[in-house]
Length: 239
Image 1 (tube, helix red, strand yellow):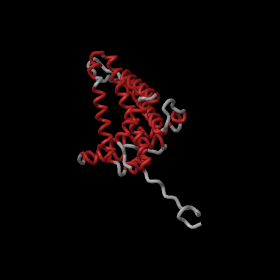
Image 2: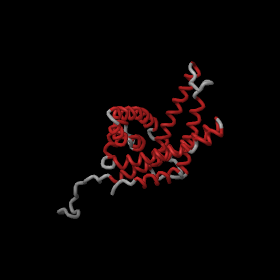
Image 3: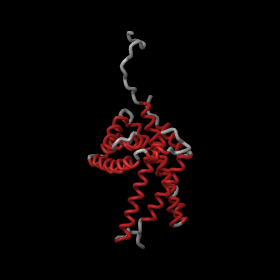
Image 4: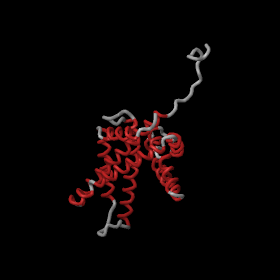
């Protein structure tokens, strides 16, 4: 068997349009709108400095951490078979540690990909694909980000070209969907326009997370089973 791009994308769409998926769309949209509201800007659209800027920055950082925690819970949910409810365990189990690892790991991941891209585009894209599933290992397997990078490297081995195709398809689809909100947002005005664009962006984010989770499950199924020592009396072995 080989990794199926179509299965990952269709499974991701199915999970993102079920009840749990729609809940996460609402959560990410609310967090994004809140973040847009707490960041103060002047009349020229530039960030405001001073106390207002500091408070806005701190609030934005806090919302960012909550968003990272929501990503962890979403990955746990989409990897599981849960479609109607989000188990309490997914919302509580080592969530603080997973969020911290996801936050720091994201910074390291971006730096690694950027560093690889300095030596032509291909090394950066290779690292992007090979290490991309580290976040699932942090969220689902409770690994730290260093262990998660190693696990993602092993998980993607043998399927990286297809995974690159999956990523390219999801990114392209996301850009097209986000683009559909641009014109209506202009006519709706500032507040309504922001709400619409963030809602569409949240839907794209949830679809991306669901597809990532379903791809992770598919890759797990493609892994070779661990060899075990034959037991006496089993087929093909002497009793």
